[in-house]
Image (cartoon, rainbow, N blue to C red):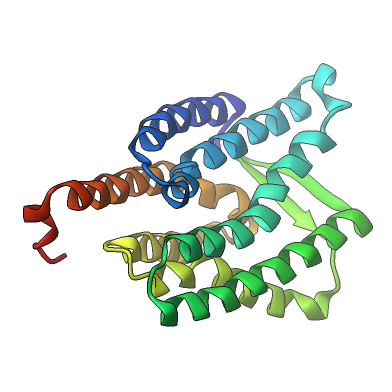
Length: 224
């Protein structure tokens, strides 16, 4: 999240409230995995709040690596694995499940790659204006394949899923990612999470509609 520590902490609080409401809508284990999305975003925003504090307060400076690594673990390791896994567990059709297995494997490979990068190479973090910039040094020739795997594992699963309206999340993530890439390319890891609140509301709506269909046969007869 850009702007300041207070904005990041505030966003974390709002996302936590949305997360509570979303988790209450979950009725199955796969739905619960989808429902915790807002909480994950909240943890990222809170972590970035501490990143901000580490730059402006000497009492937090010595602990700077902890929130940085925590934030990047979500953005670079957890999300590429969690998203295809969540879609796989929600999926009931065999063809879609086969594709999601492949995307999950891509996410696991990417997550392992990022673990090695974070362990072996320096992580450069700095405040530039009102944004946090994260730079993970890596093997330059692997950057493009890693970016492709990231897109495949974090965006494509929403379009593969047969769950009604799940493609809304895919469209929103894709559009917000392109917008962030074009306008805030140097700060994409941080700024893109600004859209987490809207994405969390979409998660709530999808779960709510899915459970309404399960309990009301009249609603289940309607199309998207």
